[in-house]
Length: 373
Image 1 (tube, one colour):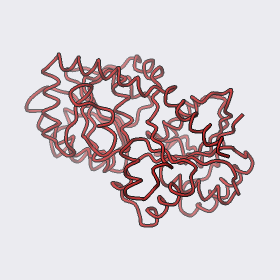
Image 2 (cartoon, one colour):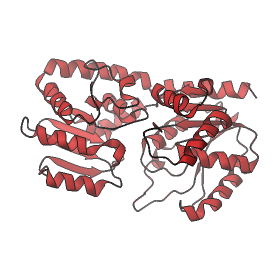
Image 3 (cartoon, helix red, strand yellow):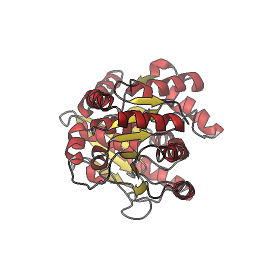
Image 4 (tube, one colour):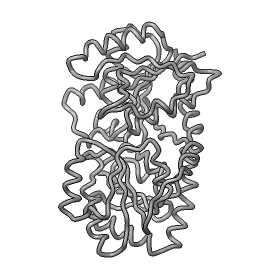
C-alpha cells in the first residue's frame, strides 16, 4: 500500500484545489492510502472552505487550523513537518508555486526520504512573481522534485524555456474532470429566464481579464438580446462592479459569486465565455463543454488551444479582442448548425479529460517514480 500525502493551504474555490480533490478521490484504494494536509479550513467568512464536502470519507484529513499569514509562517512549516514525520508518506504532492515552495521546505525540515511530485498550475512567466520565486522555480522543479507535473504543453514549454527545467523532469498531465458528477449536478433545477443566456466563471483577478468581457458585452447589447451571469469572487470585484455601472450594463449582467454547483447554471446557458489574458490550462473550458455549453475563449497562453479546435468544438479569439468576442457570440447565436456542431463535438472532447483516465496517468507516474527508488 502506497501512502500518499497531498498538501493544500486550504480548500477554497479554485481549479487547482478542485484538481487535487479529484485526484485524491479517484486513486485506486487497493493501492493507495490517501492523506490530505491543510493549513486552515475556515467554515465561514471571506475565505470559506468550499470543497471539503466533495472529499471522499476515507481520505485522512490533517488540518493544522493555523491562520495563513506571514507571522505564522514558521509555525505553519513546523506543523507541516510534524504531520509529515507522523505519517511517513511514500509520496508527497502539492500544486501551485507557493504551496510547492512550502512543501519543499517542510519536507527538507522533516528529513523526508520518499518521492516528491510538484504540480505547476499556471503560466508563471505571465504572473507577477518575485526574483526569489524565479530562483525557487528552477530549484524545486529542476532539482528537488522527482517529477514536475505541468498541466499543459504550454506550461511545460514555459518551465523549460524560461526557468531551465530539464524536459525529462516534467510530465504533462491535463486536469481531470469528474464527468459523472458534473452530469448529475447539471440536472439540478435553476431558473434562468430570458433568451440568449451567456455565462462566465472565474476569480475576479487580472488574469481573467473581465474588462475585455465587459467591453464585448457593451457592443453586444446593440446587436442581440442577452442575459449574462458571472460566477466568481476575488480582489477585483469592486472594480468589475464599477465598470458594469459605468458601462450601463446592470440590467444585462448578474454577479452571483462563488457557487458550489456552477454546472446547473452552465448547463442552462447557451454560451460560456472565457476572456483570460493567460491560463495554465483552462479547467473551466472542459467543464463547460461537459455541460453542453458552446465555449468562446481567448487563445491565451496556455491551454485553450490545446483543448479547443477553432470552430470545431469551440471558438478561439485573440487575447483582449472584445470585438472578436462580440462577433463570435453573434455568430453562434445566429447559426444554429454551427452551434449544434460545436456542442456535439465539445461533449466528445470533454471525454478525453474524464477523471479516471487522467488519474490513471497519475497512478502510472507515481508507480514509475516508486520503481526508481
